[in-house]
Image (cartoon, rainbow, N blue to C red; front, side):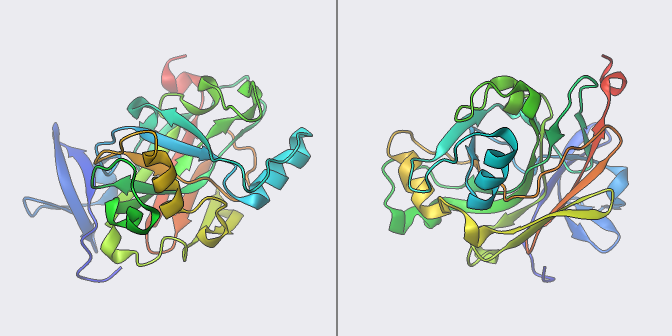
Length: 263
């Protein structure tokens, strides 16, 4: 990140929502105030519209899950596996995600999130990246216990309240020359558990935008979650999960038990 970075965040402080920028001491609000990172409530960095998520978009993750769940791997040339999420499934940096006590296997998914900036329908692949406003980091948790169909993630797996952390920064596309030149990694309680690279996506950003826009209009604020590589492990209440993507940011999230959510 350079001193001239135009990345922004959305935070809540003293009953109001503010735009914030990085500062050596934490964050700087638009009114000039500088606050520590833990003195604000972090929100998803953009007011998300439709959230479009991909499953099985890294070949190594396909093989990882095929082995564990004894299911056949999807061919790499198949149409993207896509599902939708509501805005209620999102939580910001440093937020909590519910980990139900009775669940046996719940895992993180570190993902590059693509934010649409310009509306379009039937977008040509060569023009697709011009419709991208920027990027952020996502951690899209999945509860494997609830999986009903290998190729169709059901609502309880992927559309749970606060199940997807997003942030901390919205990074303008101009600061990311190539979305497929980014290393990503996940740490659980400080231990490195996942490593991958966006160059290994099965369906890349530009072809994906072209494909999606062939049957639906993409609008400013829509978010595309591009999938996760191998290395997902079970996480438990109290665990701190950190997802990093080079040049995009470091997203921190904590798992909480039933009692923390009044259940």
